Amino acid sequence: MRIIVDANVPTAEACFGSLGEVVSVPGREIDVHTLRDADALVIRSITRLDASLIEAALQAGSRLRFVGTCTIGTDHVDQAALAHHGIAFVSAPGCNAEAVVDYVLGSLSTLAERQGWRLAERRVGIVGVGNVGGRLLGRLQALDIECLACDPPRAAAERSDGFHDLDTLIADCDVLCLHTPLVHEGPHATHHLLDARRLAELAPETVLLNAGRGDCVDGAALRQRLAGRGDLTAVLDVWEEEPAIDAALRDLAEIATPHIAGYSLDGKLRGTHHIYRALARHVGLPARLTLADLAPAPALPALTLDDGLATEEALRLCMRAVYDVRRDHDSLWRETRRQGLAKGFDACRTRYPLRREFSTLEVTLRPGAEELGPVLEGAGFRLSLA
Ligand SMILES: NC(=O)c1ccc[n+]([C@@H]2O[C@H](COP(=O)([O-])OP(=O)(O)OC[C@H]3O[C@@H](n4cnc5c(N)ncnc54)[C@H](O)[C@@H]3O)[C@@H](O)[C@H]2O)c1
Ligand SMILES: O=C(O)[C@H](O)[C@H](O)COP(=O)(O)O
Image (cartoon, rainbow, N blue to C red; front, side, top):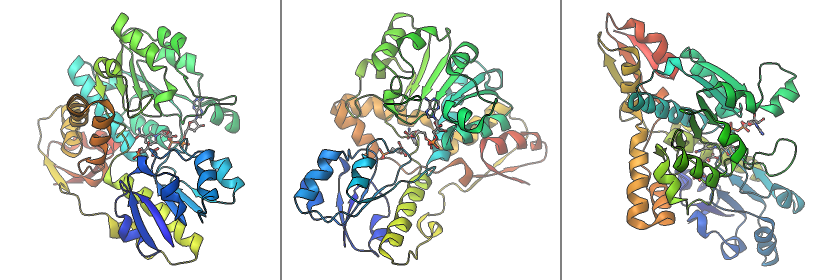
């Protein structure tokens, strides 16, 4: 069996090598020629697998029977076209959700420090309360931060009154976090969910964070609002037209990163392992590797805190010890200037430094520092007492 795997999938050979011959190809270069000799395809979100590519590959003699994406998002794959041709499709729901939540907490904590406010004073609106948004809600509530949730599909399916509509979040929240999938059609379409009208309605000083998909926000309208009134703070991880992003919007965003919110090693390995198990099942072979076999021990497994740190200071210190979002902002800035927008954006992603999740760090509290426990645990760290 010939398995084409995106070159940005870690541990590909270790996992898929036991199931067949692995051919590594950069995700943006996977085309009809690559697929002609493929039995299985393992991708990430940058490979656009549309109906015309699938049909061209099959007409060229491809034996493709399985497609797996090691990602949460699936908008890059025409699932109906795959089903039409009897090709199995599997994605990895939730695989990097914890990493996205780490990114959001790290970004908010950085803004709070720069702009002189406290996280606990802000009301956060979460749009899209699935694997990512649901975990974010849980961690923010554990930090005693007031949250409003907006998820019309869930509200309808669960007949719950725990959800609010988007306009309520826009009117009542200081921070708006977008974690919606990209959906083009239907009653809950998300393309330009934040359009010019809604962007104009955001109150001055609002923080708008998008870690869902770039097309969920009208980028040109956001650019105009930021350039014109200059009274919003934007945190953007995802962009329209990736990798050729809007340079002016990059410059106006307070935190601008190259679609890496979910790029923890842990998240990538969960995605790879999920697809490895699915492909093994598909071909009737055993999947002997466990997730624990793939993940190395963290470089920073533990740290100890003494008495004397203010709560938000301690939180920021622990977060940055594991993951500092400012590094990704700086690298997007540097590489897109040095190499041009598209090349620089992709370079940041393909050469992404090893990043672990907050839960890989054990924080030991010395006597006198015990009161930091609930907040650190709420943020996702493991705790022990000295
Ligand atoms: N930036 C990154 O690195 C990164 C990483 C992972 C996922 N993502 C993106 O985030 C999206 C969400 O991830 P997830 O794991 O939470 O997915 P999920 O499918 O578990 O949850 C998505 C939620 O959004 C809700 N939703 C759908 N349409 C909506 C609308 N119009 N308004 C409000 N809510 C709506 C759904 O009901 C669902 O509960 C993914 O589809 C992916 O595109 C980005
Ligand atoms: O949907 C996802 O899981 C994320 O957006 C994913 O982390 C994006 O990374 P990529 O697939 O582009 O490498």
